[in-house]
Amino acid sequence: MVKPEIVIKLQEPIQHGSEEIRELVIRRPKARDFRRLPMEPAMGDMLNLAGDLAGQPPSVIDELDVADMLAVVQEVGKFMPDGPATGDSKSA
Image (cartoon, rainbow, N blue to C red; front, side):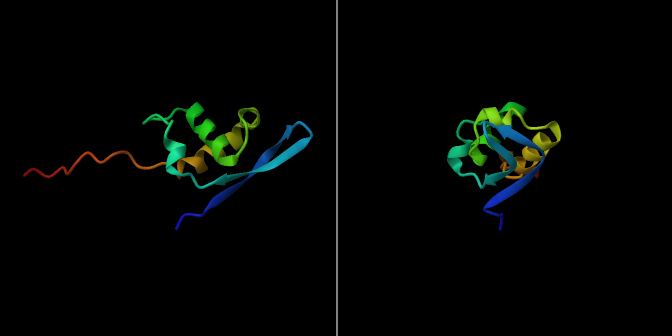
C-alpha cells in the first residue's frame, strides 16, 4: 500500500513571508489532480502538480533549491501512472 502522504525535508529551507518552510508534505493524488496533466508532463507540469499536492503556491515551489526540486519531482513521479497499454506483442 502506498503511503497517504510523503514528507520531504528540504535541504535548503524557503523563506515565504514570515514563515520558514523546512518541509513539504505531499498528499496522495486523486484522479482530479491528473486532469490537467498532459500525457507526457514537462518539468513545469510536475512542479505545478507538486505545488497542488503540497498545498503550496507557485511562489514557494519556485524558490526550491535545485536539489530539493529534484527530490520533490522524484517523489511526485512515484505517483504517476504507467503509460497506456499497447496490447500484447504475441501474434495471433
